[in-house]
Image 1: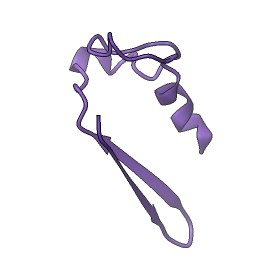
Image 2 (image 1 turned 90 degrees about the vertical axis):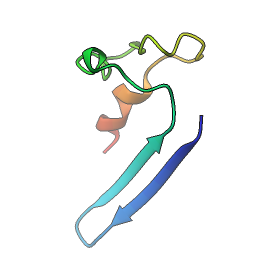
Image 3 (image 1 turned 120 degrees about the vertical axis):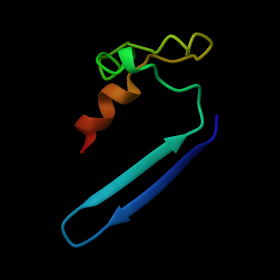
Image 4 (image 1 turned 120 degrees about the horizontal axis):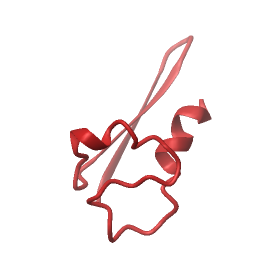
Length: 60
């Protein structure tokens, strides 16, 4: 998978936008995707702990 990371900032804020061309997310999975240890059904062959989307909003 290829990711694109784009930083943007001004005098008051900093934003990191991340986009990718992965398998995508089903609309029904959006409700739980930001919970710890939850992976989308298309990420069966992806190794990891599924904590990235849980940690990202709290890192700001």
